[in-house]
Amino acid sequence: MKPFHGIMIDPPWPERGGGKIKRGADRHYTVIKKREDILEVILAADQWNPAEDCHLYLWSTNNYLPWALWLIKELGFRYITNFPWTKTGAAGLGQYARGKHELLLFGVRGQGFKACTVHPETGKRVKNIDTARLVQVHRVRDPDTGKVVHSAKPPEARQLVEDRTIGPYLEMFARGQAPKGWTFWGDQAL
Image (cartoon, rainbow, N blue to C red; front, side, top):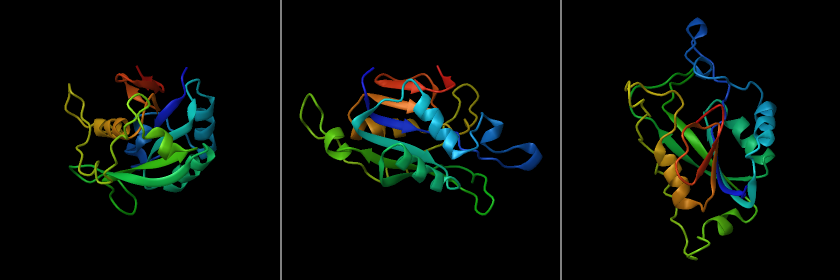
């Protein structure tokens, strides 16, 4: 398997909420309760094969931002910046503030910026990232029921990765069918 230049990870952070009615992530899928266990699962995956020069895109909720920054470092990347995803519609859950956004953290490994932004075949630089690109993206809905799919990320996020980073691409803890050029890994990947 070729090493991946672009890796997106959406860890199953142990978001809980709602007491007995369970409104957190643990209602929708299995969460991993310790940050060290999340790291272990990633490193043990057969598909985990980052290129020496690589871009990492890591989803984080507000509650788990410290864990996400720790995870970036433990995976051998340097944190660079983040991209907000502000979900339209009703405010979400929260203990202190009702959140409507998540962060897509961006990190690099090796000469990630230089090595992963010049297309190997054409020699042309890929597009620069607009940090507001994911702002006000609609929540992802099930095409059959119209209901919001918990924790599903907008397709615009994958497009951002493709526009900014040369492939091949890996999405860890992915859901559904991988689009062309992507490898999906996770118990909900088809």
